[in-house]
Image (tube, rainbow, N blue to C red):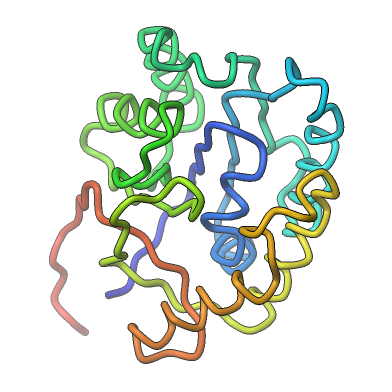
Length: 212
């Protein structure tokens, strides 16, 4: 199944979420479309995470996302559920400004309260648009992808290189290169490809076209 969007929007709750969930895909599609990456919380209220924001920008630079297309907002980490209406209104504002064709957000199987809020409000904000869910392994619960997108070994290596920019998280198990690579190999095996990123289908909006 081929899919395409001129404007593709990735939305994550925190710095690192988007790269963990879809970094290889982002590197793969950048030559073909306009990618915007939006992170709702900058995580800067936690003094232990003071470098995470700059690491996020470096990570996105490795993937090739233009700096002007990397947006970080200041919603407070772990309190997004208390600000659902503000999140919804912000996502609607993005819809008006960016006019995205495809949305990538957190999987519905993600139990982190911020991740879950982003996904629920995105489904409200982007009615009538395809929405796919990416996985952040540390907060997954029952995630099993049902939509696979083939990526190349170069894409895989760029995702790993991008995540290495997060020196703050260097010792976290879900940043381990072997785990990241193995996940993309596994998803590739499920799709009978060498490598793939896996997503769950939150909403597909399409049309059937006659093959030429």
